[in-house]
Image 1 (cartoon, rainbow, N blue to C red):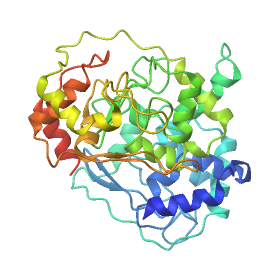
Image 2: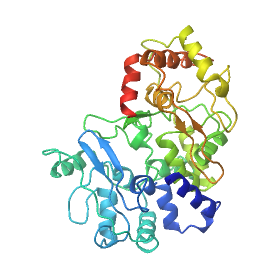
Image 3: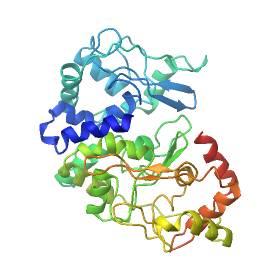
Image 4: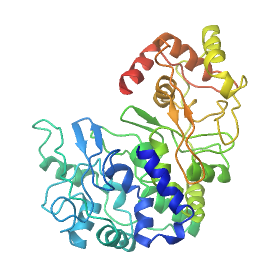
Length: 392
């Protein structure tokens, strides 16, 4: 239902980035809808569930409703919540809200976002849902300590030795886009291990809610293909599904080509660290090849080359070769959908978890990760069991 509603909206606004207000464009760039609009809820009225190590967190109503939303927030109070993670009544927000990235946004963009939410968004009288977090983890004061340790203050500062396009891309990726929230590994206190390219841990991949986000460093993709992926969720070789598909549906497809090119320039400038030797490489097996021919080859091709702009190639595929196999396993077990955009309806891949045992799924996955030039680490039946549990 949500996808049908989204598609109807897209058809009415296709190519309408020019028609957006400045604040709406910032909201799209910051992907506010993905976290604050639930599948059956009104726009930006909250209620999206996030599974965290401390419990279940539900996003809040950010419409200008006075009672349940942010209608009573002054700009300074809004800015404090966005940059410091402190709500109007003084309680600390959980860093599931990426204020650690939004702190880098410019004052101009923050003001535009505030004006959009207050003046253009329809108020929704929807009460916020209580988080499901047991005491003592539900206490908020430790979050202020967390902020004092991990929150790096200050707007993004352009680098003098980089051109305007690189700096714009860095600003979008590090700030509003908050790419590090998913693509940067977390530390002992669930903090992102790095916030910019100066630290080699930045954007080296992460895991969130049972999905793995691949490393964005050392990408082997051309700038036009990366832009196409961000704009439409597919290009001649790749296709996106899972949480990143929602990012494209709700956010990046609405961004200008100039901004998408800036993001691509920045991301492609990030060099990969030296790759550690694989502890044990995946090996193709006869059982895995038989499963591939039975379930996968019809669409993906016997050579794993897929179909341009429709079915992703498996050869050289970023998800197939990812150090963390969880997203690949989730797609094999439960299927996947490409994003809904103004240019494309969604393509659906069926899941095969209903018919494959953990051993069969592991054999198939290892065959994919060892064929057509792919070289990735071995996947075990235990890895499959973990992905199966996460997808339920």
